[in-house]
Image (cartoon, rainbow, N blue to C red; front, side):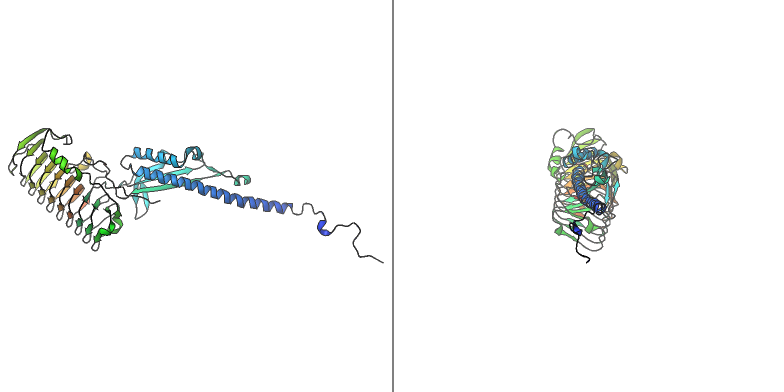
Length: 430
């Protein structure tokens, strides 16, 4: 009878040798697992490297923006902070001097232009690339034949209130009426409040700055005003010097800060009247009031008065330095400063008053630095406020239909500690 049982000594099927039947499949699975694990680990490493580079570029950009008016110092500051945050022994030459760019950031288009005007931003880039010889090496992916990968990062810091175009600054309220045209780089600042009328224009790069932005009010049609509003504080350096400057101009030798076009004086007078002859290149000390009259030219003149200084209309002033214990006032249709005032790089007109400073209508103002412990008032239809820097201890009034413009670079003065004249309002935009 035929037996259907298992042969004696035969192994069960699951104990039989099947050499080589799963080895190729296992290799595929192992390679895939290594690839997935390698990708995850190396991607995380890349993320960490990029995060480190980003921290370094942010720190470097913020350090450089503090030196916006001095690119070489800005580059040195950027490289110093970059090294603290991205150790060159680990990252190589990830950030070099050529990776620090100064230029303009346009917040409307969100674009950075190298060497653009106004200069309000710094971009710092970091690169770990094969081209630089510091590419980031793979850990596990190199087992699959891949050696390194490139990692980059960049940051842009913007000095949001870099007042290279001048500005109106006051301890008291700032009141701007209607239809005034501001320029990029111009700042409107008050410690107290800012009030706008209607249809004023603030292009990108102009700034309205307050310590408390809830104290900003406006009418209708003020183009760009809301975008220009920033929170920040400012020390009014020129205003703080009014008492000292007016006192020095009345006593002792010629102050060292008088421009070099003053070569004679002081000449002592009890009063200046409209017909009093005044000689160019001369410094006059007046123990009373000054009335400069109308329809005359005044060039290379310095006057210090213990009373008020009054000027009529149609007066042409170039290279004038005026100080008063009282008020300084100008009527209408006067012309201040050289037409090519930007070429000199300094302010042509200086005004210091312990009282108020006021201007009538239709004046043309170029390269003017002024400070009054009282109010500063500018009436209607000013033909231009070109690189005008005005600081008031009281209220600033700007009435109607005036236009502003400025030089490409900030004008310098011994009374401004920082020639770039910027706030400490800084923002990382990338």
